[in-house]
Picture (tube, one colour):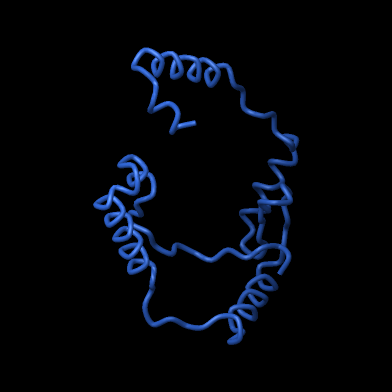
Length: 136
């Protein structure tokens, strides 16, 4: 879609933007799938530090777990040397530089459109946190 819009005239681009803006302005947020009392209960449970309230991405459900059990299971999984290994240095920045170097080379060789470079350029990548799932 974005690729096609760049080929339009200025008037056509403005028309598309106006129509999209109209559709978005008429859009409504989905109604909540929990009642007010359920929401209040969840907020109360989140304040309890001995429990962990996790919203699952794929299952679209909320899971309440004992924090101690959860932490033990995560440590057990991360401790498996056959699956994970400790890195002395985070490789993310080097990978980011390498990827951006490839994009720059493609730009020089004119094998990629300039606006595609902007979309694909990595900036300030870093590993933020690890999140387990309720299926631990």
